[in-house]
Structures are given as C-alpha cells and as structure tokens.
Length: 516
Image (tube, rainbow, N blue to C red):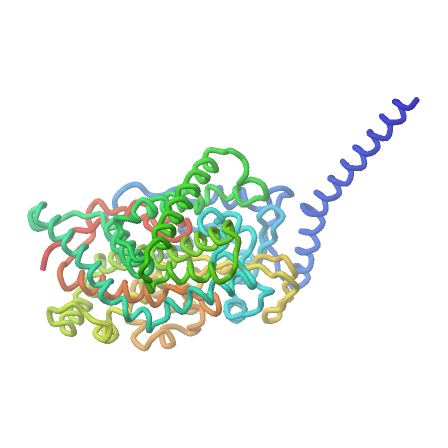
C-alpha cells in the first residue's frame, strides 16, 4: 500500500508540474503576446498575423534577398537600400502604415517611422527605455555588456568612463596619429600602382580596415595594428557569426547554449578574444610608465571600482569590444562606401579634390584645414545618409510608456529603420535615392524637411561616442586619397550591400586607382 501511495503521490506531483509548465508556456507564448498586441490594436496599430512559436521570424528570414555575385555593368545610379536589405519590413510598412507590429517568437515589436514619435524615442533619457533583450542575446558574443548593449546604471558607468576620452578636445590631439596611419595606406597604394603599370585594380576593404585599426590601436591602446591584428581578425570572424540575419534563431532563449556549429565557433572566438585582450592588459599593468590612453583609463576605473577579478576582466573586455566597434568598424565601412560613391560620381570627386588641393596646398591637413573642407563634409554626410553604418535602431520599454499619442506597453520592442528614414522621398525629395551632397550645403538642418530623422551615428543620449574620431579619420583619409590619386569603379566591382552588425559591401569594393 505504501509503495502504491508513493507512486500515486509521485504521479500527482509530476502531473501538477507538467500542468504548471504548460500553463507557463501558454502564458509566455500565447496569453501575454495576445494581451500586448490587443493593447496596440486598440490604438489602430496592426501588423502581420504571427505563428505561436516563431511569430513572423520565418517570413523575415525567407524574404532576405540573395547577395549578387556578378559584376556591375555600370555604376549604381540609385540607392534604395531599404528595399534591398529589408524587403519584408518595407512591404509591411506599405501595407500597415508608419506604425505596425510584428513578432519575433513571443517578443512583440512595434516598428516606427512616424517622425514625431521617432524623435521622442531617440531623445528619451529615461532608464525605462533601453536596449532590447533580443538584440542583447544576438550580439552578446560581440559586445558583451558594454556601452552599446547595456542599460541603466551599467550603461551610465560605461559612458562616464569612455565618453570624455572621445570628446572633440581629445580627438584634436589624434590628428598626427591619423595622418601617419594614412601615410601607410598611401604608400601601399603607390607601390601597387607601380607594380601594375600606372593603374592598380585594388580591393580597398582590407586596406581601409588596416588604416582604421591602426588608428584605434595607437590612439586608444598604445600599440600598432600589427600587434592587434589577430585580435581584429577574430572580431571580424565574430561579426560574421553573431551579426548574420541567418542566425536570428540564436537570439531565442537558450539557443546560444546549444553546441551547434556556429555556437562552437563563437565560443572559440570569444575565448581567443578574451585571451588576447587580457594579455594586452597584463602587459600594460607590468609597465612602470603611465600611458594616458583609453585602455589605461578603463584599467584604472576597474581598479577603483573594487571589482572582483572576474568582474574586472569582464568590464575591461566588454569595454574593449565596444571601443573597437565605435572607433574601428563604423569608420572603415563608411570610408569604403564613401570612396565607392566618389568613384561612381566623377564630378563630385573632382570638386572635392579641388577643394582639398586649394586648402592643403601639398601639405598634410591639420585639424583647422579639415574643418574648412565644406564640400568634403557634404560628401561624407551624403554617404552616411545613403549607407549609415548601423541602419537599424532598436529599443525596449521596461515599463508602460507614452510616445506621441501612442501608449506603448511594458516589454515592447521598438524598431526604427534609420535607412528608411534617411531615404524617404516625402522627407528628402524626389532624389532621395540618389547621391547628391549638394542637399547638405546648408548643413543637416537645411538638408530635408525634418532634420531630426538624420541620425547616421544615432542621436540623443545613446549617440555613438566615436563619431568625432570617425569624422576626423574619414576627412583625413579621403582628403589625402583625393590629393594623391584619382579612382573609378573596377569592372570587377559587385554592388552587394549586406547587413550584419554594420551595413557593408559583402563582396568588397574594387577601384581602379591612378597616381595623380
């Protein structure tokens, strides 16, 4: 009888536990999403019907276009990148309007392109609005819990340490470092031209990355690019794994812990990155002389915070990862796109070159000279409009919030497609998809009807900390290239914008480069 009673008790406990699990799954996968969607629907916001487990994820993944693999017969004349990279979202926007909802599994997302609401979201300073958990899970291996993905007091602490080191007064002191890094690239291209008999067919991506990597290494970490080359290569590999739309399933709870092929590769790369960063930190701590750079500031802050060794290491590693992205990745991809646009718009290349030659008169530009280059600034601004480094901005509400006339429930993800805002003909005019730097002749305020939608480096409290350094690098590099070379698109060039963590040319950019 006792055995039978125990068996009945065990069976009852298992049954109750199973029912509780089913109830919890039903609540998280069906009830809560339905309640949230109902709140949005009452306000006139609609969207595509989701499936229970995956929401609209499968539709999104199936809609992703294949990347071109054949050379362009002619330079790209228009740049409707939103339709190219995000066709399903553009389709939904046309169907449901400027405010619509969709689902990533049980995560309910409100997609916003209504300009007044976009402005309120991007300038909101409340800790009740932060980075969403979906993006954090997807990019955890790449950013950790650094300034780009963290929230609340953690984010505020990272910003307090990193922001002062990238203010304009500090960036001015990096002009010589940027100029010297440019010289290495100029010498490399000159040697390639000599080797290929006056015209070199160059895939510029790796050379631009080496330049940008050298700048961030020397300016912030006191080492040259060659020492950190392995580290940067691992970051590149991590971006390919972590930032691909093919791997969106990894953002679902628990998926990143499964021993899949991509997860195993991610774990290996994370381990190598951690080891390399800690090795650099160890070398720095063993030095007797004090170096006033960003790495030293991060180490000193970790020491002052009385963190455990494990927490200290993580803080330093995550800071390093985020600095890499802010000061290296965004600059490299923007410079690459800018040179592609100048190569396919010879008139603007000639105009920008004439301005550079008139201001510099054969010398390497200093900060004041760069500040006077109005046409070059316009070219860079237009490049950032058409090809913003991060074309998508995402947030999450941690409590019920109100933006404009919309009540946004707690735990709603908010998405803003920057690339859509940057190329909306209703805002920018009929030539919105064309390269026309002239629109920035009177600055960003005069460029379009609603200048608050121009946000290539983000906007508000979470604006990219590295934008001052990025603009210095871009101006210096492109000015020196223009004053030393002329260039056009190579017949081998394949126009293939692709979105991972940043928007970059999947097949690279090939230029025919001639010495002036």
